[in-house]
Image 1: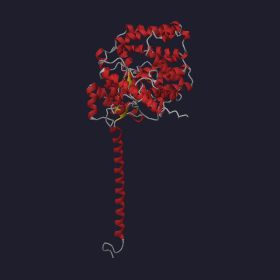
Image 2: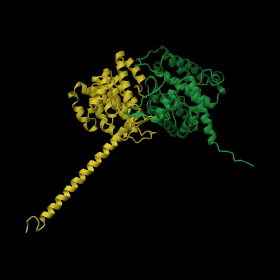
Image 3: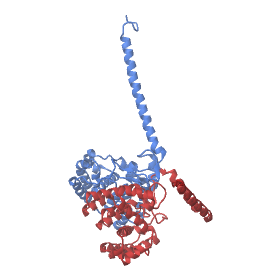
Length: 275
Length: 278
């Protein structure tokens, strides 16, 4: 078993051992309490609670002795992708950004929004690797957060409970290891190399939790239910979109038909003055 | 940091290392899936997720190489008190027991029910008294329930999690854990006894790593997702109960006696009438 925290209590103990001040620990606590409200009830496809994954990511960052703002950002790094702000739409918006800024401060929010905006795919890893030296300080920090996130997913072979993760590691693993080295974190680089090697040689694991969800999913407590507009408005929106598309297709086909008829009529003898 | 699992993945890895079979793992997996549904959104006073606590308890039981039914029971040990069955009521009931039996089997459910009965009694109760003085005379179900209780106590002590529950609860947990260590040694589990004593020593000399943000009640709480709201039936029931508690004691007595009379009347209507005989 790895030595990173998986609960908030373990994380706070680790921060104390790593020498973070009382004020730093309190700001991490506030970030954790915000994370509880955003990610409650959310689970990864492996069945692990999303909160545990966030704590693990923050713990990896803390072990690298990064500034406390980055540790806090690690706790809410998926806020714009998976965070439940109570609305219908996910993603970055002025409202959600204001809520995050109010909870954890502007600097932490900047990390989180850049994390969400950073493109992350094995196809572009070579480009990222070549341009690391040209990245700004904050973008380098966000890249480090991305690497910590990927490492956390692979600890304890957690990623093997998802489909296609092995391909992802095969294609992107070496580049991620090099990125960690280039950022100046050789210990992280070595750990990632070791974990990825184990993943690629490990057989698929069971038992699998009975879900076919490809990404994080919500389990609502039985005494609760999702709000009416959260459930039905997206369906109504999709239905309206489909109706509009259908009408557009009908109009396009209809106009094609009319043009064709007009052309045929105009080519007929005795029509429009042709004799 | 201790070496017990705090996530399901760590628990499954541990079970594989400890030599549990695939059938055993499947039972524990079913227990975990039930725990996900019943404890989702629930957190300990320290902020730790309830699921991490039950996984930790199951991990401690697995480290003692106990049967998989006990490990699965560890995953849902506090389900009657803290599990959300959708009724808005806590406590054991026939419906809840049936649900557990259907998913995990009667043996696991028996352990959980016995744990619930034991949890609400004091260290001077007959079972605890028997365990301290004549552990060989304990029934197997009682022994299993006691082991779950000890594992749960140890889990609270690990990482000094119990310090976040307030001084009274911490003191009570430490006192109970001292008795638990003594009983564990009498039951032949000296490793568990030693671990409990070590954890007690750590807690007694430790300080909080970070102060809690506000006043917290010394019991677990639920944080519902922001996109969700409480079901009307549950909210209405809980408001009624809360309202009834606020009423004058005399009015409560009258209402209770009315309720008992109505229940008896309904029961008499539902019983089949005896045919008249000449």
